[in-house]
Amino acid sequence: MGNRFQVRDRFKDGAQYIDGRLRPGTSGHSHAIVNPATGEQLLAYDLAGAEDVDAAVAAARAAFPGWAGATPGERSDALHRFASVLAEQAEDLADAESLQCGKPIKLSREFDVPGTVDNAAFFAGAARHLQGQSAGEYSGDHTSYVRREPIGVVGSVAPWNYPLQMAAWKVLPAIAAGNTIVLKPAETTPLTSLMFARAATEAGIPDGVLNIVTGTGGDAGEHLVGHPGVAMTSFTGSTPVGRRVAEVATATVKRLHLELGGKAPFVVFDDADLDAAVHGAVAGALINSGQDCTAATRAYVQRPLFDAFVAGVADLMATVRLGDPFDPSTDLGPLVSHTQRDRVAGFVDRARSYATVVTGGRAPGGDLEKGAYYLPTLIAGAAQDSEVVQSEIFGPVLVVLPFDSDDEGIALANDTPYGLAASAWSRDVYRTGRATREIKAGCVWVNDHIPIISEMPHGGYRASGYGKDMSVYSFEEYTQVKHVMYDNTAVVRKDWHRTIFGDR
Image (cartoon, rainbow, N blue to C red; front, top):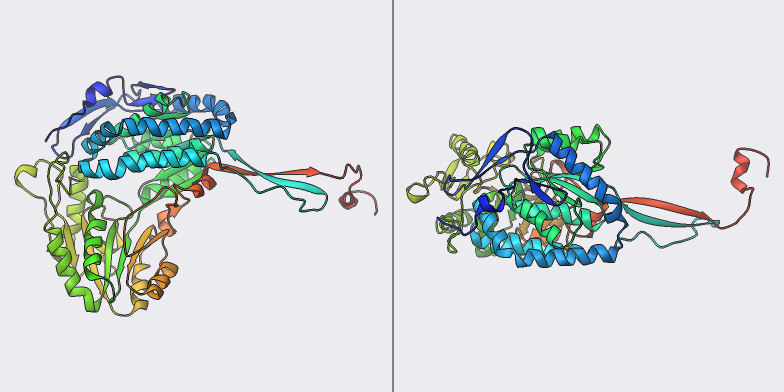
């Protein structure tokens, strides 16, 4: 297994990016980045501590007046240059993403990197369209209008499953709106976040606008979220950690955006195109080795199609090719770490006592034995209240359950704490219309599962969090709305003053 990307040379100056340059962390602790496909150590670096977070926040605060005061056109031009630099560095970004995460190179090249470039291009355009309502005389005696203003320094925490895309989702709307930002990527997968920040500098975005602190959640993360110099926190990760982020952030009365876990239902009605549903389920369950908050995890199949669906998914899963992430023919790479692989295996092994593992359910041997690989897995016969149906596994595991009536299918789809994404499969527009209305999720696909686009919002209901990434809706998270009201009368004694002194 090989690659062309030389990690140690790229990050010899450290894995913190503060005020426009790489530097080592000062926590006194180091961390090793490991290639999950081979177990090989790629880089050992010094983790960020509180001093590094303080320095990054100070740099962001110093850069804020100038960046917030730039015109929308100036910020737009900078983001257009940023998109161009990212496009020029696409191959290096793809190599680094596959190396640190174990993603198949075709996923990095065709999904993660182009999606990030497109996000940058979208927000370059959107930066020119940050507007409030038009002026109007709503009281009769005053002219009112609404301003949108940046909040200040944003402190964001991103997960390890899509490091490059999550950096983009956090950074781009924040800086397009005029904020500055300190991003903490996962300490296991920081490489492309650091490259993203360097690309911003190369594009001419001023030093301090985008800073990266690479440390643990309990150390650097909590200090960033609770920092008095940070005006807003945006977090993507698990629901349990999101609860802790909310506790820390609300102690200092910060704006808070949470994109948390998911357990996406995949609802197949009895008039669906069975072949399309089978292919959609396998692709939707296995993308990024199932390490995706929106991955198809719970397939509910109306009983007339159930047996054929189970057989079709099992057969198709058996054709998925596991292998070297840098081999263009590889379909499925390893999980992000052996720890994550063992966590997924634990869910499946416990399920054997109450359900049937139809296919998969183990780590492969042979040439892949040293990596964090796990075979595509299909589980049937689990109860709705069982662990594999209710809990986020975050691996290449799909659980399939039957249902009878449409009412039951939709009720089962809604029967978890989560509400991030879902899909409905049917040829009947009225059935799918009902499903899109009644399934409680931030995104409901019809006859597909997974595609995302920069122009549309991403975010959840219920335990999946609140607020939106991507699209112009994300600006609601990253701007303050200010009402400005002008008196038009030039009258000294206003009519309403009588409530305080005098008569009419």
